[in-house]
Structures are given as structure tokens and as C-alpha cells.
Length: 149
Image (cartoon, rainbow, N blue to C red):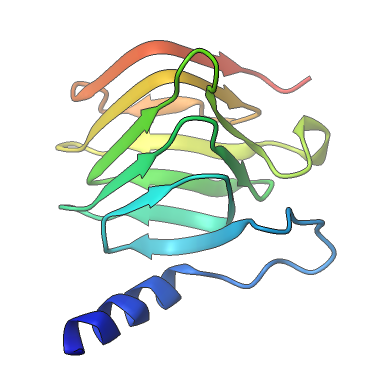
């Protein structure tokens, strides 16, 4: 029971309230802050601020998932643990600005020393920083980075 309570508290700390005035997908899950428990993302994920995947934590992103980030160059994904993004040709994964490129860019995905990642069949759109940092532990197959239009 204690373990379940700790998990629920950790999960609740990751979820932010949807920003006012922003249309959301009805089943979207919202995140911001530190990810301290390994998790899997599917469907529509909304990031409402900077997200840090902590050391020893793995975030797995399932095929067809859309990760929509609130516009703002400080709204980025910082990877200190592992980010495994495994789309398939029929269901690529999309990282994009919430509201599309016209809403403005978001920060990007930044890997810190000692982190790891996998990008398979992934599109990263409208990210000012693209995918950057220490990419020694990051494999890429079918990663497309698109600037805003």
C-alpha cells in the first residue's frame, strides 16, 4: 500500500493543470517538471513547461504518440536518464509545438552527459534547439527535424 501511495504521489507531481485558454485533446495527459519514475507515453502528451527526465529514469514513447509542447524557448525536454522514442513507419512519433508552428517554437530535446536515447521514426517540429547536447549515447534511425514555417 505504501509503495502504491508513493507511486501515485510521484505521478501526481508530474501532472500539471492545463494552461488556460489552450484547447486540449480530450484524453491528453499533462506533464511538467521532474520525471522521477520510469513511465511510458502513448496517445497525446502535453508538456506545459520544462521537463527533466532524471538520472536512472526511462521514458518510453510508443508509436503514434504526439508530444505537444507549450510554446516558449525555455520549454524543453532535458534528458539526464533515458528517452526511448520508437515509432514505426506507419505510426511515427511527433514532437511539436502545441497549436502548431504558428504558435511559436519550443525549446527542443537536450541530452546531458551520461544520458541515452533512441529515436526511430520520429519527427521533431518547431523546436528551436532541435535535438542537441551529448548525443554519444543516442541512436537515430528515421529522425527528421523540421524548422517552423
